Length: 267
Image (cartoon, rainbow, N blue to C red; front, top):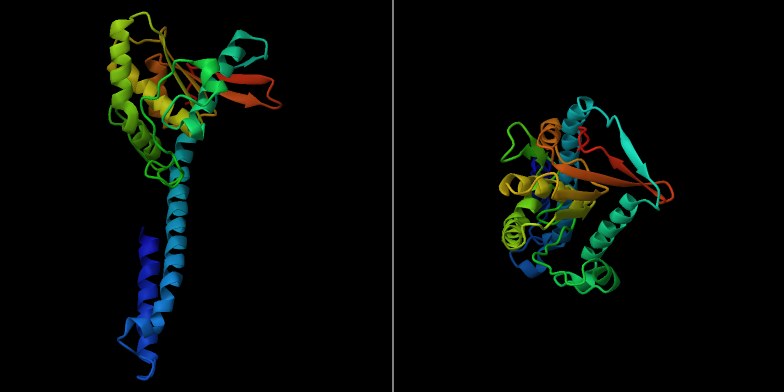
């Protein structure tokens, strides 16, 4: 923000100085003949570059802060590898298809994308849809700084992921709460890929906090290619509360998935 404002200020100052140097015959109060009107697109372009530079600087600051946490966060002591004939692999394929269905532009707010929708949850219903464009309001790239988690003391999480989770948490909570009242035996599954996987991590924790009937036996998150969501305190909370979050990562040629142990501090 400071960098962008500084560039705009310098441009405005330069324009004023240049106008003062022009001879009276060129200066005009008529906007149509104002030679500085041509500067408008240049100023807009430079402003856009300044905005991108501002995002880059904030991203660098974010990664520096996260790097400090990284040094205190041990690597997962154990991971699991499954062949493509295993039940775990086949189950992960199901959730990968669910993620693919949610990315189908034709079914942005309707569950009608065709094969993936029909082969996973034929009677599925979209209860909330929103865009996650990288430069959007809830964009991951533009809001990477860590902020305090509102319900976990000492925990910090990515602002972009948190704001997206807050955007959907209430309607998801109400829907699952009402369904569990009608069907107490229901199993709750959270699935997400990449940015959606980061949201899924926060949403799973939120559901575990707000619905006491959910536990490690009936609430499981299947998150594919999930980015780092928060700091060590956030990861410790997930492990301490025994919240089942499975991070799936495709290895090499796609014949295997590696699953991080949910009890390690890898989130």
